[in-house]
Length: 138
Image (cartoon, rainbow, N blue to C red; front, side, top):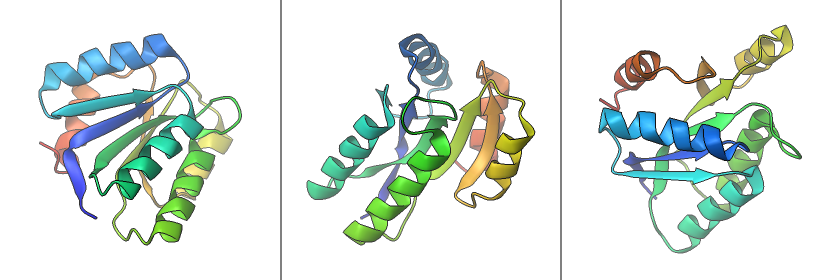
């Protein structure tokens, strides 16, 4: 099942952060579809439904590092398990978003090969634009 490089998924338990990030991302005019979820399980269910209905999966996922119940790293692990279970070979580009400066978060980032970027809150337009260019989304 191919990914949709024109679709992005935002996952943050803070509704305001999702709205601000959506506005910033819309201003870049790169993605045709911007989905946002406030809970990792909600995002997992959304992606599972896309797979089941043969819809394209977002090509880029921006996930908050610190959320209740499931953190950003656990979300990526669970999504990898879902992909394996459903026979999905291609994986989206993941970036983690954090206000954290904890060394352990950077160490975990280094141990998570699916993660391509560690971005700090608040998301900055110029920084995100540079990431999108670097990762061939622009």
